[in-house]
Length: 255
Ligand SMILES: Nc1ncnc2c1ncn2[C@@H]1O[C@H](COP(=O)(O)OP(=O)(O)OP(=O)(O)O)[C@@H](O)[C@H]1O
Image (cartoon, rainbow, N blue to C red; front, side, top):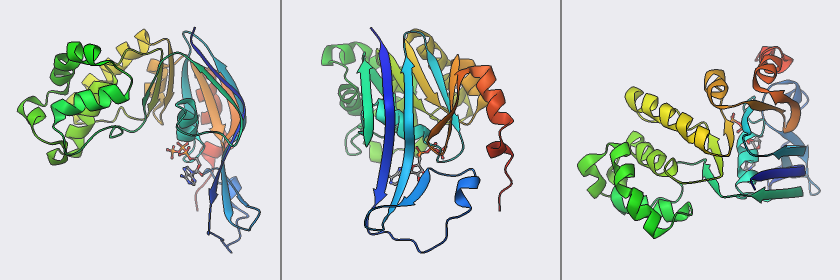
């Protein structure tokens, strides 16, 4: 059984020892961030998610849409159980592969090849599984002899290639992705996109945050539109993209 069930999730980030005297009257009309308020002792609190409920099952491929700071990454982190919500209940059934931070679970002083095992174990793969897949991962990364050098010597694109190769070779029930497709150079980007598509087809449940409607349409069948941490729309991907495109948030003028 594959299930992601969120019941009435609220997540607050207190920002201790940070009292702002500035008036914040206009920020909520502008398409940026969660909801700002003053905490009990006067410090700032950012409400990143506000009373969010959602149930996903097998075959659901959910796109997360919304302005900068709307709560997409925070929601993915709640699903990955990296963040505990301030209120509400999270139920996850199935193996989860979060592809949220490409450097997560990597050791910069170890070689690229060793990092296949380090990050693979971190993502829940067994040693036997990793031994079987290490060559395929190494080949996909196209890092060749560089795999024998410590990762700290890699360029950021080379690091991203390796992290991407490892994460997309994990057998998983639930795949959580955060705007990682813009990885490496143009040729690797195309290859990464193809891999993501086939990975998304195989995985039983996908949640993907991106600002690219094209990527979201390719990979997802449903969408959730967030605005200042609240659910603004939920439904078929084309309808929600349309709602977002015509919303005042998208059409709001900056300044
Ligand atoms: N560690 C933190 N401490 C305080 N506030 C945070 C923290 N992480 C996120 N936030 C706030 O939570 C809100 C939601 O941020 P989040 O990263 O989830 O947005 P997002 O929709 O992924 O944005 P983007 O599209 O810009 O990546 C923002 O207002 C942000 O300032």
